[in-house]
Length: 219
Ligand SMILES: [Zn+2]
Image (cartoon, rainbow, N blue to C red):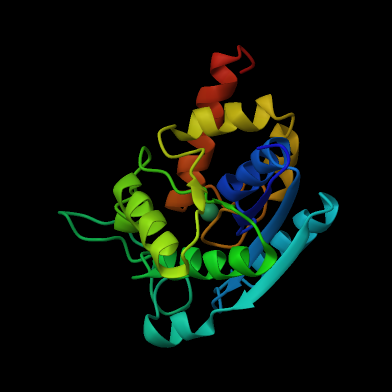
């Protein structure tokens, strides 16, 4: 795959930044795409822009504000609280159709720039209840994208079956642990690096990091 081109769906968070490092190792040319859907924390876009620039990766920021128009949620609105899903409910951070739209637009971009590969950091293991992070959905969309554009895209999900600790290990193996730890934004409260420490995203990230560092014998 060394001589091929890839598009990474990139939010500036831990997972997609790790995927960006992974893609840079796997492919000759890597392009990052970030979707602007009026995220509550505009810092996410700045963060993504900064990381892409530091890594020397061509970066496209696409306007997806229509998503917020259609489906306001806890990631786009200050007056909707972040809460975890209980009793089979979806969490308030779930945005219906988000990965369907993002990956479809990534497919259009890939087709425009002659990229065969699309990389996304979705993960079924630390499953937060998002149906569009499941492997079955990605496989189904891969087929749909190929049929819709008469293309032969391959969607890669390097994090699909690994937990957060293993995602940190992957970053470490790619010599990117410190980079990912200090420059990415995962926190629902918009705090860069180690985050607010309170929200579900921070807890997941920190627990995974502690577990990984412990396994390395460092804390
Ligand atoms: Zn947080």
